[in-house]
Image 1 (cartoon, rainbow, N blue to C red):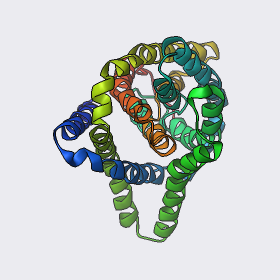
Image 2: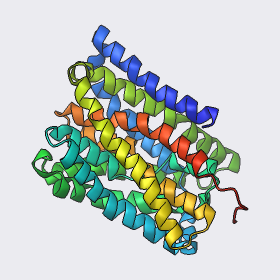
Image 3: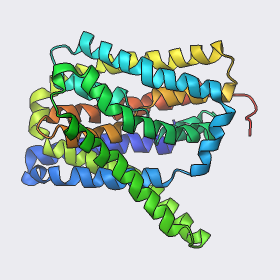
Image 4: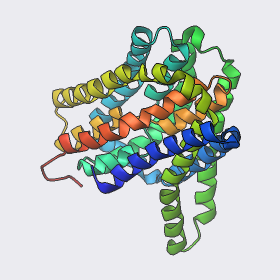
Length: 317
């Protein structure tokens, strides 16, 4: 794990602790509710701004990898998320919904960093990003309504509005920003890219701190319940890399594509899931709080995977 990824993991954990302390020891936590969604919207806009449309063409070079990632991310993982929730969290409906939201949203940001660290095929990994984004936009409401059961007691229109707010709005803002900058000098575009890259982690930390500050009383009362998520998360983050590696070897993927498949199917999109949880379930804070636990487990796992699965051979162009 590089010093940068270690620092990011520590910053997310520190933001959670600072927010919790503010919420328990001061009245500031009550205002966290008004910070979370704006911070997440700006952060997601910055993430999507960094996506290059030309990256999509790389998909044609890796049909087997793309097919496997779609099966694992959009067929196997939702079924596994439902099974883990029903089997391990049957008596905790809010935790089940939080787990479902986390596991059915493939990552659209930091998995690229870990793919690069493991010397995977970053071009194909980047090309999968917009595909995953579009499929999340279309399928997330379906997963929640079909697999959430009675625990997902939310109107379909409300859920669609939340998905539109937290996914479609940042995408449109990012497209508009790129269009406005298309005629600017390369130096201006580079500064915009650097800004977008630099604000993601601070805004995520701000949203996490605001969430913990706002829901500090809930966390204090439900701390032992949150720990119940750890077995389900542990099973997921052990099983998916093993399954992805086995599937990649079965179809004969090259070493760098094998690494890419492992990262694409293991990393989850906790910022988007968090935003949707806040927007769709505002009166059920334990769902959103459960999602904050995800990256605290996920980031160390991805860092370890980057070392374990690191491709040692020559990389392809």
